[in-house]
Amino acid sequence: MRPRPPVKGRGIFSGTGIIVTGLAATLAALIFPVWSYENQSGTGADVLNAQTVATQYGPLSALDQEFLTKVRLAGLWELPAGQQARLKGTTVAVRTAGQHLVEGHTFLDERVREVAAKLGVSLPNEPNDQQKDWLAELNAAQGMDYDRTFANTLRLAHGRVFSVVAQVRAVTQNSLVRELADDANTTVLDHIKILEATGFVDFDALARDMAATGTSAPAAGASAPAAAPGTVVPVTPSPTYTLPPAAASPAPAGT
Image (cartoon, rainbow, N blue to C red; front, side, top):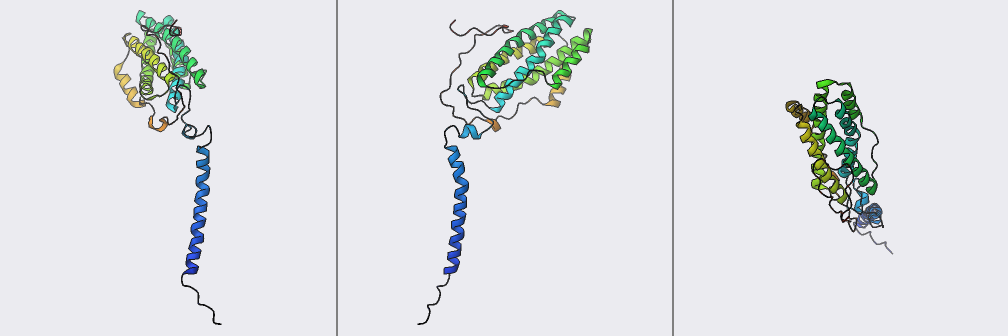
């Protein structure tokens, strides 16, 4: 009996089928772990996005956490600077500005530590290197030179943080951070006004410094919260205080 001739193309299609099957299996192996991880309890967008943490007060973004750090750092050097200005200032206006810094940052420092504790955010315990340099300059300055150095250095620092406060207040989805931003906005604006009232602020130099260093906060898009933390606990707004804010935490609502 004569053997049947081979069917044309069978070997080619058979080889192609093996290749396609292999590629499909590889793709499935790559996709399955991601699908499996995202659907496990306790994982998902809030975990995969490492810059945002889900909390009972709403998503806590990287910008939110940076804001808490900046508020704490401000208090760590501006509070002692204010205490010093009350003693070294040669004019009533400078000494008054120092008093506002003491009262404002005593209040804000207590607030930021309270918020950070509830959100599980670690805060620094000493000023950064630049802030230490500013304190050293103030320590070395005397007389009217001290007044000018104090007013301009503190005004520059407050101008930089003011833009960060504004952006955080505009985009944060965390109720605790939102309330802290309100307090910070009130305090920083008061300090800006009282420093300018000393008459020592050089606005031309201030504009040059702000332009050289930049004052915009980090882009919020990269850390936009994508978490779904479940039920968000609302925060009752703090009572409104005349400027500067009280040097103690506001009493709980309803007391």
